[in-house]
Length: 307
Figure (cartoon, helix red, strand yellow):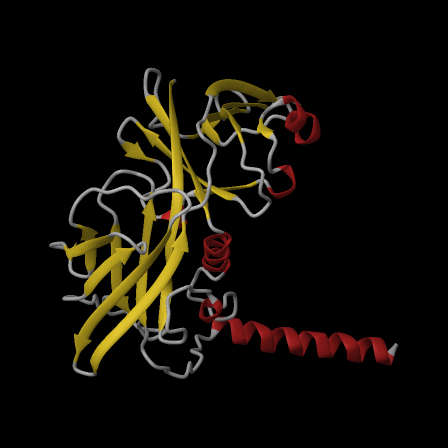
């Protein structure tokens, strides 16, 4: 009995100490390291002006604005042609001088040079544009109802594409949705939705073989409405999509290296040092240890449907 009492007292004291620790603000002393250069940009088979963004990293607890790097010389070359960038009115943002499109199978090398008080700095990277499906053959919008609980009716309106996937287990896709002229997932590749097939690579997406293995797969929920009853019912989903809207799907084939970078960023998101490891995010910007970020390439196909 005495042992049991002692155990309760110990647990009670521990709970008080633990609670006190939670209520009290504390700050971990993070050692300051060398400031690095951040380079981020994508070059795709889309005919447009492509962008590279160059900045400097900040201290862990810094609340100051990110320092953008201006006056850099930026270009991409493929061994034959050179594509030059120029700085826009937005400091640190560089765009190709002309609209241009990458070519599947080519490797593009990024070269960045700038001068500051510490002298001249050179950074480089390379990425090969991977094969993609020749086209998205068709798309369908279907309403799916699921009754998981008595009295609860969940109805989802989903978007289903049909296309031949690339027969390569290292192929990963990103998906962006455009409704009329508005993007759903943002403009950065890091905001797009991932689609990884791995063992199903080479199958026709939503074809009989794939459906028999994992069922029909939607890539986007257009709207979801759930009702308990007329008085307490609630709705959620994508209110900006209305009947008659044009929905465009953009399917990007990305490199395995970018997929790893995407995953690293996703799982290192946040400023809580107890929950993430932002210093372990991969990069393909060289020289390694001097820069962060990623230069990625991708091939893209698109298709549209009217809701």
